[in-house]
Image (tube, rainbow, N blue to C red):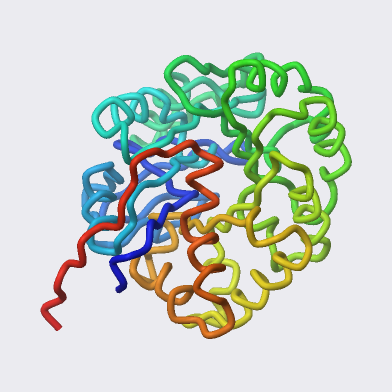
Length: 322
């Protein structure tokens, strides 16, 4: 791996304890990287994470080896609210992390209710399904707000314009995962035009393997809207390394909004169940379809600008025993 790149991962997840909620079902760790998800057991993390703790220290070890200088932590309903843990991470490692708070709508019960439900569920009981409360979020101490737009009960993003305006006035950013295709594109466009200085990072590369993904990418033509590629190797998983179609998708997105609006992301740790962290960045570094300048912009320079990182330098190369 080269040691002259500043590389930033714009889409990672962290938790000490996974207690999530999706489609009125619990999500929780079972050990050995396994989790119960939608009533089935899934390999949610690499199996060597035997205690199912997806900690900052483990991520940093992976980052150092892969040459990743810094990262932006996003959140998801299926992991549960990680606000408290992420604040600790930000305080411990301020130069390497940006963090988002989780916006929770009425589909997401409060964390204590989820914990009680899961504890009873694991004991074989049939607890009462917790109900969601009114929408809630926090911003103090966080760099941005994560909105799982694809999981909202009300998919019209203009109905939460006041939330976007609060984030804008605070000088923070929104990380957003949208519904497949163009379902939410026009409502987000309205938000963008009403909040012209709000930084928005659209996740999962606009769900690039689904019809209509280009419509999400077109939103990055607006000055403060970017596209991040968290989960790109997951979306092209059937093709697998070195993901030539994923590189082609990057080139198509470049033609739509420009390479300076695209940011690399890994979706760590879920994508690490089949590939290594180094592989997630290596297929970009080794591609002959991207110029050196395009690689530098995509892998780090754009994210430095969007997230406001300062003083980052390429990490020293760690020798491989192989």
